[in-house]
Image 1 (cartoon, rainbow, N blue to C red):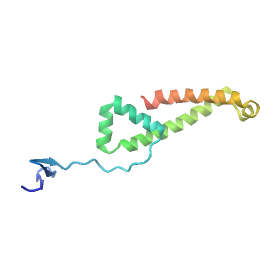
Image 2 (cartoon, one colour):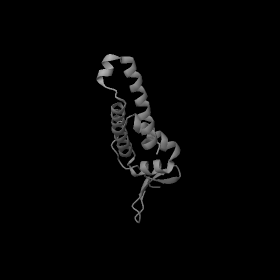
Image 3 (cartoon, helix red, strand yellow):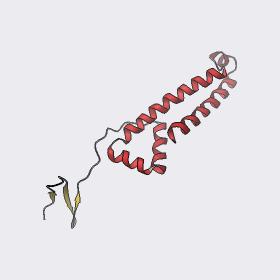
Image 4 (cartoon, rainbow, N blue to C red):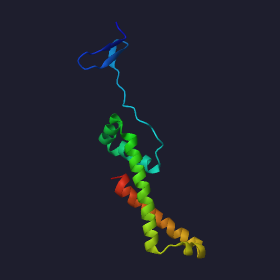
Length: 125
C-alpha cells in the first residue's frame, strides 16, 4: 500500500496510519504574538462559553488576530475610562502630592470600576 495518496477530485492528500488513510489536514498558518491579560480573559471566556465562535476563529486562522484586537481595544478603553473618571472625581496630581493614601484609594476604586466596565462591555460580551 502506498504511504501517501491524493484524491484527484478534491485535491486532499491522505497518509497511511496503520490500516487507514487519514487526511493531511492542518490549520492555516497564523503568526502567534503575545496576548495581554484582556485577550487571555476573552480567550478563556470564548473557549468555555462560546465554543462555536472559538472553533470558527481557530479553524479559520483568525483566533490570534481576534484576541490581539480585543486586547488592544480593552487596553485603550480601560485607560480612557480611568482618565475620564479621575477627571470627573477631581483626582489630580495636586491631590497625590497632598494626600497620597487618599489618592491611591480613589484611583484603586476607579480602576476597579473601569475593569468591571471593560469586562462587561468587551471581554464577556
